[in-house]
Image (cartoon, rainbow, N blue to C red; front, side, top):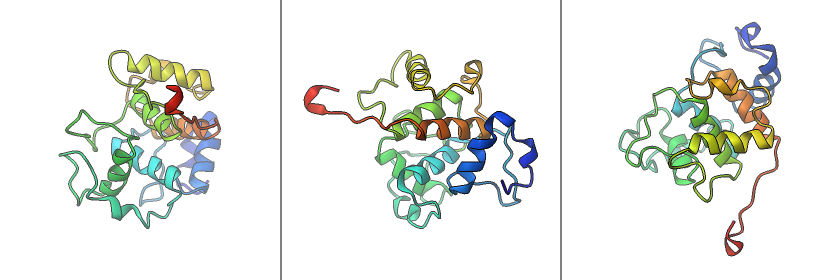
Length: 184
């Protein structure tokens, strides 16, 4: 891939980073780096989810959603307001009901839940409430999304390369479709 620090990407995650970079879904920083072992913020995850779901990899439409955010701590002038606005209204991301905490690092569990929602899971709120982390990881494990992830790291700040791997594996599984009339 074209990042200035591409040699720092763990071999296990290299395909994910390369493919998502090629698709312009997971982008690097202005200095040309990817910072694979660096932590990723909740806002950055919203941006990559927006790109993968909408296909708007050049971010030409993201600004339309900047005033759609349901969270008090996401100002219209926040760099990720459009991504967060889109994802919150599509119920792909959740905060605490009032705030999203866009500049906080995201844990592996949180990133996993956001990404699984993007491929259709959590329509019945299975990733909410007590034990949501276990249900989220169990769903991902059953789908094969975690085959290259050390599950012991899911409760800590997620690295950029780990989130790339989760997203890459998630887009390889069939999306789920719920049928409300049947109760699932």
